[in-house]
Length: 83
Image 1: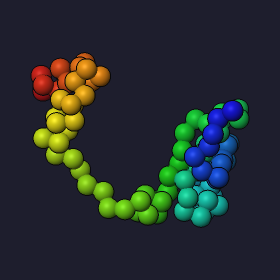
Image 2: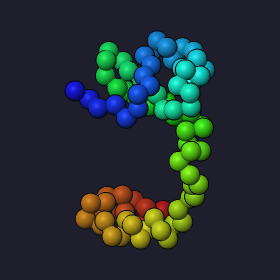
Image 3: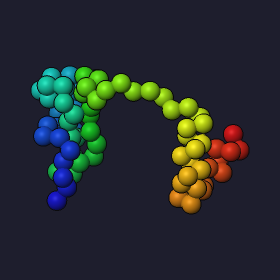
């Protein structure tokens, strides 16, 4: 059984009218189901704003994390260094 990360759900059919799905959720994320399986989440703008202030990581910060996780990220790191 899959654990949902929100108490609001909608079917693929209901997504034909996404504005209604968002209104019904009251600004909370909505789990999208297809054949009773979660296929994704619809997250309204107001839910993202509630999380807090976001910022973009600098290239130096990204490279530091990639370097720390070199064993796990090796294929990605090689690709980025070529850029």
